[in-house]
Image (cartoon, rainbow, N blue to C red; front, side, top):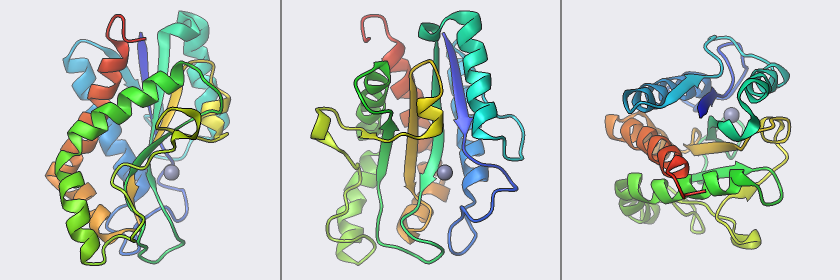
Length: 216
Ligand SMILES: [Zn+2]
């Protein structure tokens, strides 16, 4: 099984950062992707970054790289997880927060991978889930915000979207939005050692649980 970790965007992508510039999405996604790849490799898995470059690589080229591996190994022997941070606004601090994942519409193996990531997020984000309602009472999050964002309209927790990396790749593909880069409390958590560890752990554990024999 080839595990491809996609890190969203590049150092030439405009915008895509926290209002105070402390978190840049491309850099954060690359740091987490590197940690996830290293952790999976240390456990004996065949993992690699889809985009080792620092510059942005087009979605078409990202999908081409994934599908090249699918051609070599078979689409059932490849997975891709694309790591991003969410945003609710356009340059100022916002009140949305939380973690979520996306798959393409319809039921595929990607939905099983996404559910495994949600299960892992429930564990890895325990501290975040505990502090979230406390911070909400202090105005950090809007009243309807939740630490784990779900959409059960089709029976599973992930959201569905026709994102390019989900639609144009032949293997199971999930895109994760690890908290909001324009929420002050989320950015503080994301940039903390604990936060980086939790976001890394949820991806690592979710992928491993999906790959366990009998899990799919
Ligand atoms: Zn992004």
